[in-house]
Image (tube, rainbow, N blue to C red):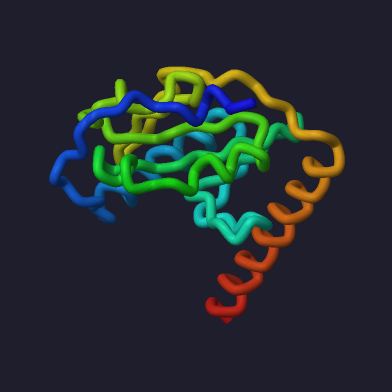
Length: 158
């Protein structure tokens, strides 16, 4: 059975290329939004499927969200890895800049529009709750990753 979050309308690929400065601004805005919404978030979070989620967030209820940042149409069209993230979160969002053609994104996925100053959730995805074992493993991985990063930062400042 196919996952309805994976399908997207076919449209011509534009000539734009992914812009890391735009993606960095979107990431900053999403991180600010998540802080306001009560999520602890990490960027570039490694998943057990040898993938790296752009942003993972965890709230006090234990809900895990993953955000995939897309800086342009070509960036979205070239990406074939994002469906692998769906099994590692309760909710999945795409985060894009305000001028991104959001109609090309799968309608069952969440949508965040962000710039470097902040962001807004424009569409909530359907919740697909993780099973208890996967949730526990993910929460442990998030905690270990955050702790290791904090230790590196602390070590660099001493």
